[in-house]
Length: 269
Ligand SMILES: O=C(O)CCC(=O)C(=O)O
Image (cartoon, rainbow, N blue to C red; front, side):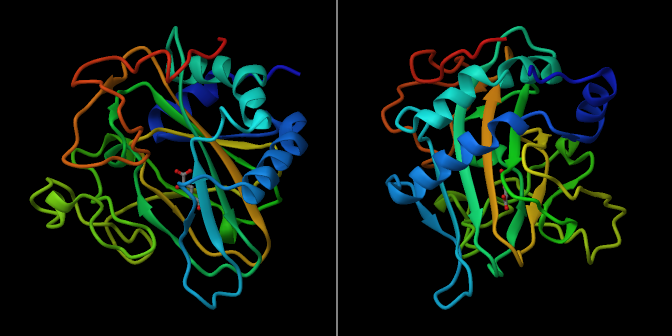
């Protein structure tokens, strides 16, 4: 079944910075779950444990594994995600940036802090999108949460290390020096933030812009998610003040370049 989106979804993505697409990857849930199991058994050097020793459930993540985990590669090239991304972004081309697995085991209390992905990355552009695909039913209490419209904010939220809350870039340890805004608390603040959050089923996808501010609470039940992150025609390399996440050591790109196609392949559109 080919995954398609309608005009309403395209408009919601543009206006809100995120949209929930129901059932677009249902046929891929078992395949991606096999990939996540393989990833857990054979983690990469990028595996992160974001929780605290003694937590009742782990919150781990790993990324950049599509070229060694065949289930992830198949999803990227055969699921129609490239076409979906092209439609949402209004782009002729779609390049794979990276895959990302985020697993909260049952009982994992660790929140995913409010953040946007762009400041951690070395690529920016209006045409960017991540697809967060849950592989378990996720109630609204533990789902991905999006600050509506935050992809249009002038300043990015200060990027921090998830496990410690410390500044991600040494040079930007002082958030003001980095030109960042402090991490918001949309639940406590009275700044008129609206949070979008959807209870989701396996194979739904939340598509969101690299600039949109998002986070998540802990979870009572197992919550496995697979994210695929892609960029469009106008995305360009940007030099950051330190090592980015993912780092892609030795990439050799400079400000203003398109991502090199041998490392960031085009997906079928
Ligand atoms: O799964 C989560 O808790 C957070 C996901 C996220 O931050 C992302 O996919 O960028």
